[in-house]
Image 1 (cartoon, rainbow, N blue to C red):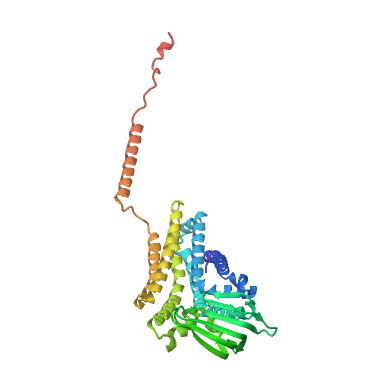
Image 2 (image 1 turned 120 degrees about the horizontal axis):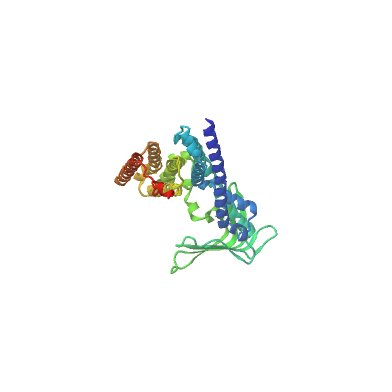
Length: 410
C-alpha cells in the first residue's frame, strides 16, 4: 500500500470508528430510555439495566456500521477537496481510483465486521437478551412485588400478594392473566413459592382455586387444587412464546430449520427473509463507498456544486438502503422477490463505478447552448483580433495645433 493509500485509509478508518461509537451511544441512549422502567417501576438494579440495553445493540450493527462508513467517506472526500488535496493528486497523475482503493478496502473490512455480527454476535445477544428478560420477570415476582400492591409487568398481567413470610413464601397470592383476549385466567392461592429446576422456574401454589372465563357472556369455571405449579416462562411476551425467533438463529438453523419451526408458510418465509437480510446487508458498505466516490471523488477547480453532490450522496445511499429493507420485508409475502435484495446494492455499486469511470474522461460540450456559446466566444475573439490589427496598421494622427508652429513667433 502506497503512502497516499495509507494516509487515506488511516483517516477514513479513524473517522469511521469514531462515528460508530457516536451512533452506538445515541442508539444506546434511545434503548436505555425505553427500558428505564426496569429501574423505576420494576425495581431492577443497574447491572440488569445495563445488560438488557447493551444486548440490544448488536441487532442494529448491520445498519450502524455502513452508515458510519458512508459519513466518514463523505467527510474525508469533502475535506480532501476543500484542502485542494484532490487537485494535487490529479495534477500528479492520480485518477479517481487512487483515493477509492483504500476506501474500498475499508468497506471490505466493515463488511466482514457486519458478517461476524450477523451470524455470530447477533444470535448470541438475542438469546442472552431473552434469558435476561426471563430472569427479570422471575425477579419481579420474587423481589419486586410488594404486599398490598397490584403489580402489572405488562398489559393484561397482574400480580398481588397479601404478605410475604420470613421464609420467602408469598401469602395470599393472586395472579390474573388476561393477555389472550379470548380467555381470562385467575389463580388464587393461600401460599406460593418459587421453585427452580435446572433452567426452568415454576410458581408452586398451594390451597387455592383457578378461575377461567372463555367469553364475557359465559359462566366462569372454578377449579380447586391443593398444589398447582405454573411455568413462569409462560408469562413472557407473546412474541417470545412462539418459539425461537429468526434473529435468535445461527446460520445452520436458518438453512436447516427444525420441522416444528416451519409448520406454516408464514414461519418458513420469515426464516428465509432473515437469511437474505443477513447475507445482503454486508454489500451496502461497498455500495455506499462507490456512491461517495462517484459523486465526490473527482477533483474540481471550483467548490461550486459540492454541497449538492454531498446531499445527493446521502439521498441516494438512504434510498438504496430503504429500498433494500422494503424488498426484504416483501420476502415474507412474496419469496420470489429475494433476488432483488442483492440486485439493489450490487446494481447501485456498479452504476456508481461506471459513473466514476466516465467522469475521468474529458467532456465535450454536447448541448446546443454550449456549442453556441463557444462559437460566439470564438467570433468575438476573431473580431477583436482584426480590430487590433487594423488599429496597428493605421498611421497615427498628429495632435491638434501641433502644426501651427509659425504662429508662436507672431
